[in-house]
Amino acid sequence: MRPRTLTADERAIEGLPIRLVIALVVGVASLSVMMNTIGGIQTLGVSELDTQPEPEVIGPDETDVTVAVVGPEGDRISNATVVAKSGTATLESVHTAETGAGGNATFTLDPSLGPNQKEGTVVFDVKPPAGSEYEDDRDNTAVLVVDEN
Image 1 (cartoon, rainbow, N blue to C red):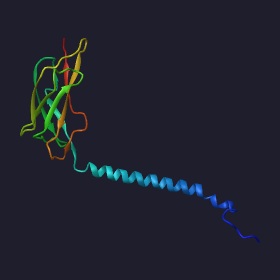
Image 2 (cartoon, one colour; image 1 turned 90 degrees about the vertical axis):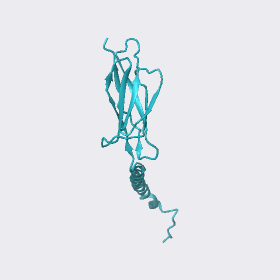
Image 3 (tube, rainbow, N blue to C red; image 1 turned 180 degrees about the vertical axis):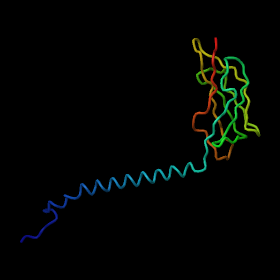
């Protein structure tokens, strides 16, 4: 009887492909769990801010708009900087204001609409107070500008 050598044994590779597939599946699943855990840690304790403009609908003429900055539970946020800028309605310049103790910032907006444009928006961005657990990554509530003529 001839001694078996590893190079002559053709059965050695029979189980290798399925073992590689199993290792790959387990590795991808483990990586997915780890990435979800790491992603959750980074946002722990961070809350998204939103704006609540009043009035929500204005005409294309000079109007005072009060913007409340609110947290996820509706709590008002003071010392946040609110930026009003052109959306689909045009403002001559960017306007900024800081929220007071009540969480409100007031703007005098004079939006304009383009030719044959019946409506547009003025959008708001919020810079959260320094050192807070807030962020503003999503779109905020905008003011709708409607031309009733």
